[in-house]
Length: 153
Figure 1 (cartoon, rainbow, N blue to C red):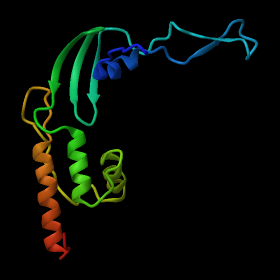
Figure 2 (cartoon, rainbow, N blue to C red; figure 1 turned 60 degrees about the vertical axis):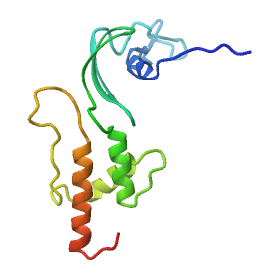
Figure 3 (cartoon, rainbow, N blue to C red; figure 1 turned 135 degrees about the vertical axis):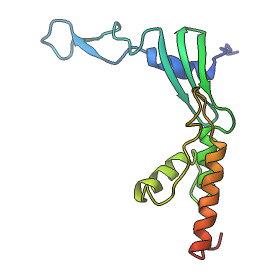
Figure 4 (cartoon, one colour; figure 1 turned 90 degrees about the vertical axis):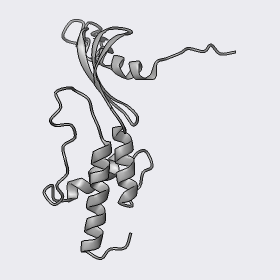
């Protein structure tokens, strides 16, 4: 007997930027226990741009109001999360909670110039994203390194 409330998952992520900042002010500038939440301190006012990146989505949106969004660019093929997950699996890294953190941790230890990867869609004049070619480039680079170093897959 609980009420069902529909929530647009992606819109909820965007609107998090509008939650009042947790900034507290003293009522009389003296007592630290007598603080009140400054609800006028919004982190974002409409209109604003949002970059929405999650496991399955990647979009740039012009946010005009609640329920009013204009998509400027988005993922054409594979999501960024999928690219990280497949890369992590390819490299034998843990993917629990997503492959991104494991790939990032390994990248921090590596040489950023050791493998040249393409910059997707760099010649396009729109704001769309594509990760399929990058995934393929990572796979080909890993295969090449395995052959060069005689590493079994």
